[in-house]
Image (tube, rainbow, N blue to C red; front, side):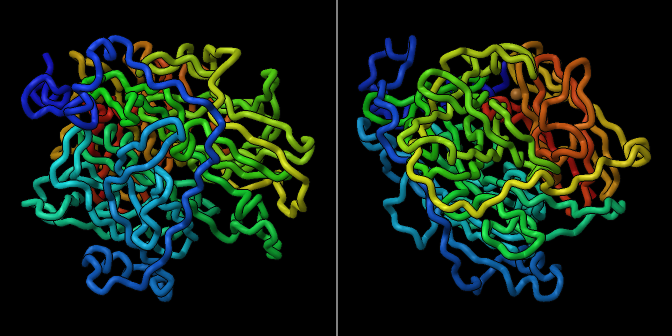
Length: 574
Ligand SMILES: [Cu+2]
């Protein structure tokens, strides 16, 4: 039986919400549209790739939230003087996704200092450095009442970040009156209209004596995380990047420091967020809230533009590719018009730089919420060469891609997500060293001494559960002591369904997979990750140490419709 909450969410009882963005839109779409919904077909590669500008720092807030003050006060002397402050509004905006489409109404984060006519998905790209905390004041200016899907009460999660619990974007308020992570449009009877997020970027090391820094500066992203409504809210546009640098990965390809890696930087260091949408003939986004399986769209966006193009210089680029789609996974290739494959190097995942560059790859797999940083060298291509970022996965529903983990079915002619047009050769002082960021394997004695837990991911009576239970934010499924090694066994017992499992607070290391090969970037000593992919019938062992911040946290499937339909659990640290 479906619970009442599930029925409300599916729109089957009063209190649910509409399928489209406005009631008049529903009237304008013939009911036959829903038999086989299809977006308008659009000419690819006519829009330039949008590149959201970085936000502008503002001076310190005078009425800073006391929780934020407390956290900043715990930092080593002097660090807090380097704190960055930013103002961001969450707002409704009208943007263009493609010149052949009417304007689209979206929700988005906008830097207050930035012009209102930013491109879509203008969630500012924060550029942070380790040791420079950032306080982001987010102000909710979404409409007080709105029609259509999504929910205007918000809570922002810095995905992959390591931040205090109050700042993590916990999915909803709980009975503890001192813990309310939600901010709402002005006039809300309970919640304030703003939240000061304390994103610290400090390296506290691992007290168990691992001989390298624990924190892995990486390509983070932030997005709404409100309970039951994360899917529609992220789909409407509430997402953005936060890139993190340090004195190894400095973001300067001409850095004279002998320690600096000098990876491609500046205009040659480009974040790419991949998303899929379903678009009505009038240009509005459509979403199917009753779809528990996982939402797939047929219109493919990069940085908010439908199949854009990017004119590139003939030199090396660093692309930070994020799967920002709700349920679609990607198997990416660099191709040309005849379908031939072209090589690239992989230097990082969402868990930061790999310990070493993985050279001459022709493909990489991105499950939901994960990132891949690839280096493409265009220097050997003659001017005018056209290459494509192409997705060859076979995926028809929210079940996940066809095939098994590391043995996916592929289509020979996939979807060309964007086009690169190679220009003239230019000087290229960047480097791609073999050795990147050291990551010693975890000592066997530490693994042997770890606390062990098992979590099973299943489909039960039409809803998604972990260890037989739907999400209950008032109750923790595990009490995890601070700074105590953990080995978690994550088991997918839901047949052919996929579940990319994301755990908040700490990056994990993949230790082993049962009866199947490890992914090419999963070896301990190569990479960390914030998300462990469970393919059909997969079972994976992961290692954590929750070093410091106590509090309530969550882990969940990052096929967001699975998360929104109860595949999430609270765990408490401390
Ligand atoms: Cu799932």
